[in-house]
Each structure stands twice: as C-alpha cells, then as structure tokens.
Length: 113
Image 1 (cartoon, rainbow, N blue to C red):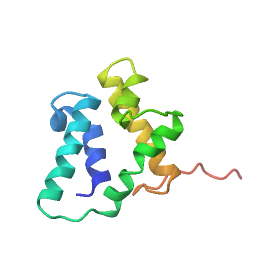
Image 2: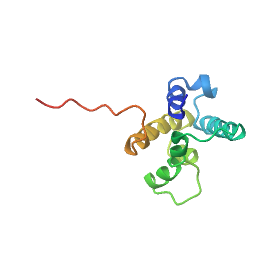
Image 3: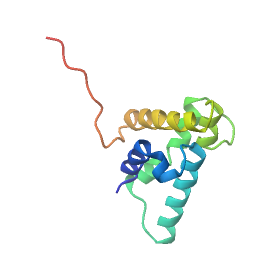
C-alpha cells in the first residue's frame, strides 16, 4: 500500500489506525511508519519523498516563520484534535492536487454545451 492510499484509509477510518481522531496521533503514526521503513532498509517511495515537501508547503500557505511542525501548525488553527485532523486531510488534498501528486485525478466539471 502506497503512502497516499494509507492516508486515504486513515481518513475514512481514523479510529482503526489512530485509536482516536487526532492530528497528534496521525503525526505519531506517520513518524513510526517512516522510522520502521528506515529500520527495515526500505527505500523511500516517490510519494514518501514528496510528502516531505508538505512541511514547506504548510509554512508557505500559512506564512509561518517558526519551527512548528506541520501538525503543530494545523493544530494551532483548529478548535480541537478531531477538527485539526479533518483540516489536515483537506490541506493534504489541496497540497496533492496543486502539486500534481495525487494518485486520484481531480474531478473536473462537465463542459457546458
């Protein structure tokens, strides 16, 4: 399963993967995912390499000049952990589509006749 497929699965059923809908839990889950892959000597996929660009994208989008991680930045603009998690998925979807990274093409509206 590719990283973006995994993120889609987490979005659909966060409690199954994270225990509770929380951006902090997602961040910890992803840190463990990347750590395990490095420990096993599995080289990064293109999606994993591109995910590393998400941090810089968040900093640019929110005009941040601090050392906040992407999850801390998103959490700072959200009411609570579940809403921060929802915001992550919205932002990641935007990031994926604006950078041509999505494995699922954007839905285009039908052309007017």
